[in-house]
Image (cartoon, rainbow over all chains, first blue to last red):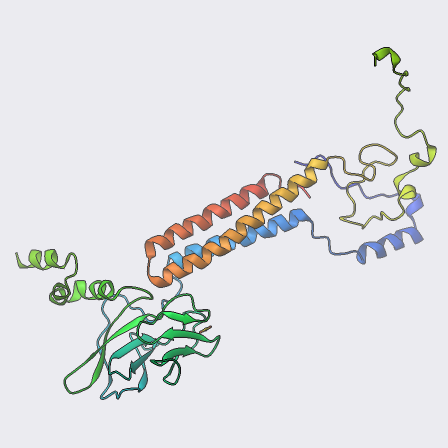
Length: 217
Length: 122
Ligand code: FES
């Protein structure tokens, strides 16, 4: 508690007329009176907003691009995909932009095409780098085409991966997703663990053995 | 040097020995106007002595500065914490995200405490 307090407004015969008008003009033209106490209150409000934001993030108001709860339904992406070609599609949801690329050595990779920086669309640029790379034009973000890791620019996280398989007839299917930076096995176990235990067992997931056994008995 | 050698002290009188320093504040400092600073609430007495155109309680202002500095530092920490929390959420580490939210709430309580120490202070 402060010992000081604002002075009582000075009133008196000597302030009448001209003097009072001058004081009023003075006060009106004065700088805005944001005191340090006001500023502390503003800082406390901002801090409260950040705390609410943190709780909001934790309770899931942000959409995690290219992620789905549980196992997404497998989706046919293309009938054919020639080396060096890329294809944009939507997976796992209808809103999740994704990108499938056949690298020049024939390997097939898929990623969420939503840049992890500020969610621009990521493009496949075959002419850049040795292997070609995934390039975000917004702020020159560059991702490695084989792993999805960030190789240049501001994006903070690798691109979320999409697992593609190729059938004997050459058609390409998207079957599962991994979160940004999640190891492939962990991601597959997370998604196959419940809906397809036999698949999880084949992958050698921890816990899959027990789950299938208890179902058998 | 012994005490006896000291000259006798003059009698204490409030104010200055120089009459020109005992004039009212508005005369002594024409620059200080009702709106200068924060309406200059420091000046609540006329004449010389505490409260007349100078801080009566020097620690008050510096305490407020310290609280403000601490609060701003905590808010900067919160901004950092929020980026980390969002990053963890996007990577799917939901457990870590709740820790982040807890950190943000605790920081807010700290700032709130700093404010509540003296919400009326300037
Ligand atoms: S949005 Fe992709 S680099 Fe900024």
